[in-house]
Image (cartoon, rainbow, N blue to C red; front, side):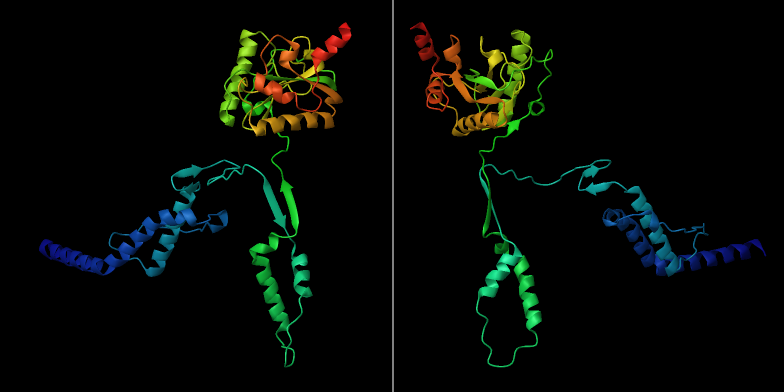
Length: 349
């Protein structure tokens, strides 16, 4: 074939190929849309190894039209490829991988008394059976069983099924002790000296610092006190066995079993309970006072404190203003309060 004829034939084939692309442009746009949407759809698609397909994708000559079936195979292959890439769980702009016990969302904390009222289905059904059945003028309906089943189904989703009869009260006065690791306590400099239990005395003190009704601030105050007692005072650990904050929390100091460094002459025979704050002119919160009484009761029940223990204040044992005038007057009204001055006067006589 001559060169002009060959050139003319090439131009005709080129025009035919361009004409064919016009009819397939819509299909190409759909393929492009599928490829783009696969990135988004892969987030909601659970990819497993069973979904893998053995697809043989071969090369093809430019201008070759793709059949509809072939388009579906290619789109599925692209989708599987994108799923394999997006194997990390994605929530918005948060990526989670190799993690456990992850919570995303709001957290609701409930402070105060909680009252849970519950009722089983059997009790509710007995109440319903006690009611007199409606009188029917005609024969008994054949759909009685279906109606009864429907009533029971409705009964299961009623909100008042679980709020009658039985009452479980969770009082705020429960004696919960915040352990040392929760306020990031450092270890004692040496092994603590064991305390002989049950103790005969309980000494009430105050820390003579600021007070707070926020747990975060009380944690900071306790950590500062531990550093001061160890580094400045040269003591083994924080001085007190327990600390009570105006937030209504009991914080573990040296605990039940270690000798404290709170009251000279009484450390080896007593527990030291210190209120966080200075209470010369005001009292701790009601929650703090309640928690102190509960801690004393728990100590007796668990065998850490003698049942006939003597409750004294720091100012009765040493020359100090601790636990503050207002708190000292309050403690004098509590059971087991012991007047050391009267005992000393009797011994002198």
